[in-house]
Each structure stands twice: as C-alpha cells, then as structure tokens.
Length: 337
Image 1 (cartoon, rainbow, N blue to C red):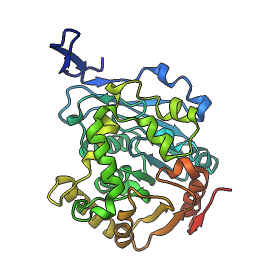
Image 2 (image 1 turned 90 degrees about the horizontal axis):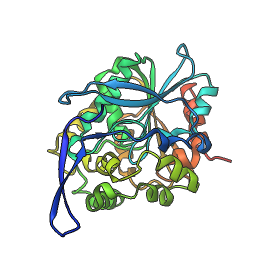
Image 3 (image 1 turned 45 degrees about the vertical axis):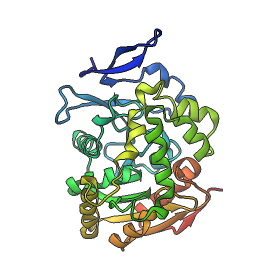
C-alpha cells in the first residue's frame, strides 16, 4: 500500500460547479510503463529499497540498479537531475561495467521507477539528500566516486558532506552550487530563469518529453519509451516539475546557506575531483567558476559537441573521461567519434 494521506483538490464538474476529487499522496508508476526499456537501451534489472523518511508515516520505495561485482576496485554512484532519471546514464554504464567497476544508479523520489509524491510541497532539498544518504548506507557503499549532474550536484555534495568517509572522488558535470545570487546576477542565469518560469506556470503539466526532444538528439523512441516512461499522467510529474523551484533565489534561503556550507566543505575536502562542462551548456555554466575556485586541484574538462544532457549527447566519451580520471589521467577534452 503506497497511499499515505489523501489530498483533496477542486475541479470544475460537468455542471459547471466545483467538485471535490481526491488524489493519493504517493503514486507508483505501473510496471507496464517500463515494458519497453530494454529495446531503448536500458536492460538492467530493477532493484528496490523501502526507506523511512522523517515526517512520513510510511516508507517510500526507491529504485536503483546495481551492476558489476560487489568486490570491484571502484564503486560509482550516478545521480541524475531534473527532469531526468537513471535512464540518462544508459550510454555510460556499459563503459564502467566493462572497466570492472561497480555501478549504482538511483532514481530520486519523484523520478524514474521510484515512488512519487503528488503534492509539490512534499519535495525538498533535504528529501533528495536523505534519499542518497539512505541508499548509500543501506548498500554500505564505500570508496565512492560520485558522478553528479544538474541538480544532482547540490544533492550529491550535501550527501557527501554528511558522510565524507564513504567517498573517494567527486565528478561534477554541468552542475552548480547555487549561492542565492540568481536575482542579483540575472544575465548569468537567463536559461535557468526561463526554465523556472516555465515550470512555475505549467506545474505538473510541464511537458517532460518535449524537454528532451528539444534539448537532446535522443531518438523519438528513447524520448517516449525511456525518458517519458515514468510519467503516464500529470499525477506523476510533481517531482520533475518542482525540483527547479528549490534553487535558492536569495542568500537567506536555507538551501543557499546549505550550498555555502557545501562549497566551504569542498574547499577543505582532500578527495579527487573532476569538473566537466559541455561546450553548449547554458543552465549551470555560471556555477563553474565557484567549483574551480573551491576545487583548485580538480581536473577541468570540456566536453565538445554536447548540450546540457551530455550523457545523452556524448555518453560513452564522458564515461571514458571519468574512467581515465579514476586511473589518474586528466583528459582536457574529448569528442565522440
């Protein structure tokens, strides 16, 4: 049973008067929605954890895949942003497995095959951080190389800061640690502000498949059967629609304070780091200078011929860059042949 509490919403009925409808507070995408994943490049066996969250009366089911040997010399943790899910890494996972690494890729609450809260107010930065922390602890992952993309960056760094002894390296791809300066530096954040405006207006009706059609070179089947699979209706889209609204606009926002603490932590952290941005990135590019400032030891990489979703555009090449970084070589740039 995945329903926690019933949320009551108003809608206009056939007679023109308001009718009260109820929707579950938690939904789970039907398995039939994922029946075509293998044919669009995602053949891995789904695995699940039932995790208990502070303030929620019932556990939530979190999906992850876990490939490679448990005794592998390296463990990679792949974190997505919005509106993606672990499907985004399908071109990179085979490269890592072939390198004999263990690969764990999870879906945050509200995304992919994980449970989805229907009330936007139920989502928070802390919820996503707690998901990562609980998965890492439940699987007892150690010596982690965290691969973080988009808003998986703020989430992953916060999780790293809470359990630093479990992490060996961090890879930051087209991401940022927003400091609450969006409104004071609007010209640096034009793309993000446009995206924020879109999801503010459309909410749970944000067209997720259209995002990937416009922003990537993904095939139509990958878009509809892959990226769009978890979201059969608006009832399932609160997570991707409202995660962008968690980006702090002002320095007094609690998330801005958390990101300042995360930046300070990275400046003290002695682990290895890679900072990679694609040549066509627009959403998070303003955050690059801060990451390189707090991580002066980082391998600084540019990925050519790629947009924001560089895993989709240059996935195998990005995976090879990360593999070489793990093996002690920093490749300044690489383009997929």
